[in-house]
Length: 119
Figure 1 (cartoon, one colour):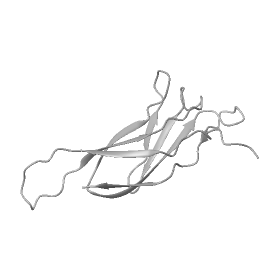
Figure 2 (cartoon, one colour; figure 1 turned 90 degrees about the horizontal axis):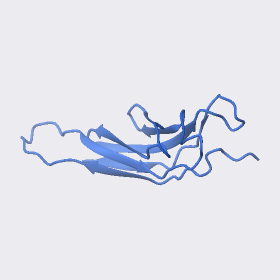
Figure 3 (tube, rainbow, N blue to C red; figure 1 turned 180 degrees about the vertical axis):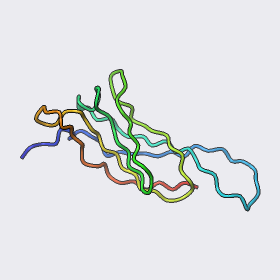
């Protein structure tokens, strides 16, 4: 049995809502909030170099690409604007190379789903 090239991708995913309470009428629509999603880093080399990174999936939203840019590791957080509501979120690591060293790319299994409530 072959091991996934991403066996060290941690499934720990956390979310923090950052917002300021503002005035306004009760009839105005609830404002979008900045939510920061963070996860534990994958130690796989392909994730932490050019062509690697993470893909963040949020229910009813486009996926977010968090690519490696430079330095020793790919970023392990992303901030997004979300309307108040309930969302499920997961993260996958990716690399430009596949497990055999080819250039077809590889994608880890998704992390454990978490539920994020934005108020």
